[in-house]
Length: 258
Length: 260
Image 1 (tube, each protein chain N blue to C red):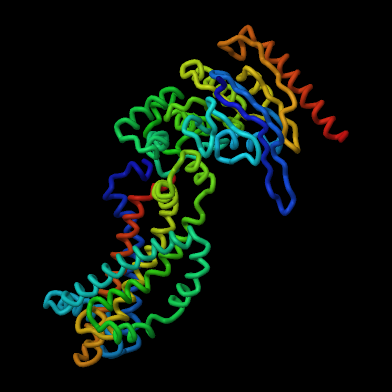
Image 2: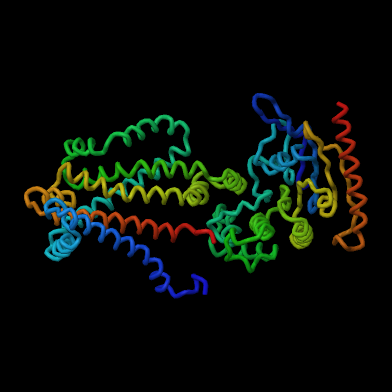
């Protein structure tokens, strides 16, 4: 059974009277406990794809399945992390992280205990009383990650979660994401425009092309786990990254020729 | 030592220096105008005469009962006007249809001078507490409704999407995201509303009624012909406005976390 399955998903938008096809006949399968990265140029529809998977956007055609049941509307089995932390500025970190549980009607004691556990997973337990404006970008995104983890989702959907951070913080958070994955066993779908990030984190990299957004290739990353940027598997990331770059270049050439 | 480390009383003292200085300049200027112009007390009494009348007015119990009546009108009117204003603001922000249908009437009601409406309301509903509270509520309704509407409309759509991704109900969206997010604007409009409510109470008392600071002003300049008392009453009204305004500011500081 796949954690996520997309069958022939299409989605378009009306933009100033003209029709913009964001996704066309997209098929994706993500196995349980797998990490899949989706890469592509800006505007190729990868964020739209993630929103369709999450249930925030209904597809025009096709179906989205999570564990063999249709995703209709926002699904509690899926946890979404945005590009920005989107923390509520008037709440401290703990009650921000507890927000999903609060909205789901979980009693205060229980939701605080679960929020603390989620903060521990992202190394943020000492910041539970801090307010969002006191956090650095990396800390705020760790808190946002903890918020997504608090309801213990089966699948984490990450929409360019670290792209606003500096390169060093980003690498750190990528490593933390992997160790978190090792401990929780959640399936992860990561949308990113960073090829190094995609190959470092993912088992498979799906490459998207622009207009209409389609998946043009799939690049497996053979590097063994646990992974580190300096460890023995490091050169395998380079090979996979080169492969992704080749596929992207070919897709771009084809687009220019068309 | 940074300002935060100083003892609280020392900080308060420092902050009150400009306030006291401004008050002194005002009183000295006032005394100078009266002294230089040689105005008689029944035209413009000096600060000393007014201060004495203020003290005696309170001590003899002339001002007190009127003050309490006006305060009750202001507080009840503000409570009614703010509740109605906040609810209407939410409705206007939520529903384009409601905004289109109601806005012209709300604006028209605000543009109509309350001075003209007050006698009409007194005519319809009598001159009792109810109609005076109604006038107070009417005058502070508009800024609070508009402030709430603007506040809720300007909530970051990214936070709304976050709420959607967490399956917030409409009610949860309102109570957990929209209202807290709009709170600075709502409280800002409450600052305006509270001072307007005081104006509303005085206007309402002029339109009819037997007690209240507005009535006392009429008595003082009319049958009593006690101009210092009239000025003492004006000061009482101003003080009430200032204290209520500061109260809203204090509430605001407690509810809205300021950015460091």
